[in-house]
Image (tube, rainbow, N blue to C red; front, side, top):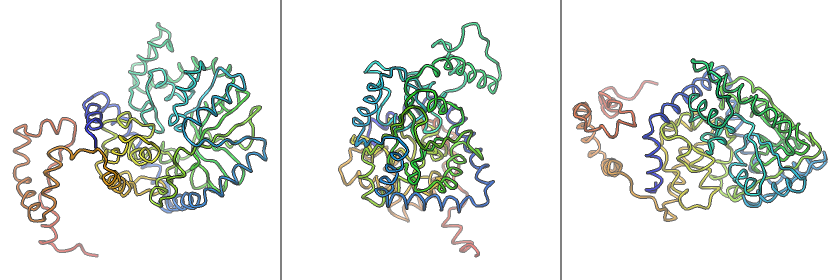
Length: 462
């Protein structure tokens, strides 16, 4: 990891309020996801089927893209191809200008964050309004989203209350509930009252897409708040901006992919609302298909596998690095383990090649991925690629270099672990590990190493 990137992660990890907010939110998400997955006796089979659908689609993406375009145009919609982020911004802002739109509704969309669409609109004098509550919170705060599915996950309810008061969302005389659950509901209702008049006055609605169905030209949108329904039905014109990898062949594939998405993302059995848009809901529908280096990634079988991702965010919730530093440390719309893979593929910045080093390689991300992306394998592969390309990554902290030296010789490593087990407790009590343990857990070494267990007890019985 480059020194600037290491400093960015380190500075955010030192924020105790941020860490507390992250741990509280991700612990809750992980518990819900685990319970929802356990309810499905066929969960592992479902994951394998989901991976197979994604692999099949990506292997024939050109055919399915052509089929999707034909299906959309047959139903009266228009499809545009955006080679890169500047092209996507030109197309979408051009549509807004032609329609004379100035008041724009947006639902949560990682693709619009990727191309920095809001910033482009604001430079041209448009007024984009985020309708997803989390996106609206970070828009008010002038921040980027911190999470793929929960943009304001890094903020506590108390911080959001103070933000709403400062930005005029809450009347000054209102008294918020004291309990956390009551406060969260109170804030949600206050935001709804504040946004409602603006939702009814919009000229243009912009959404992303969870999936795009080739056989029917259907845009699939999953939500819990109802804001997407406003965005797709209230304005007279609608724009969808989505990456080309969001294509799936058939409507029947949603029976596999939707349960994987919602149970992994929010721990729900079913999403609050699924919208299937197969033609202009309002007066017009324009769909912008974003490439932005995605088709280049298809040429490499390894990179292609990364494009399986269905943007559930489960890998972020279990990642010890994300849970410590938060999504803003990545400097990308896609944080966490999947962001460390996607961002180097979609970005041309040299600094982003170091992001695969922002991982402990513990493997928790690979275990929870609903479409079985072997994330750790790809992190190692992209690290090797960056090194071969002359990445500016530094050799790392002294502790990592010492570990590397010890791990290269089995006898040296065994002697070191023997000493570690005997002096670990003394080092902790003497405060020698104080700087390390301030931001990290320091579990005690096992009483017996794996080598000792194997030598004394033999291989495990089968």
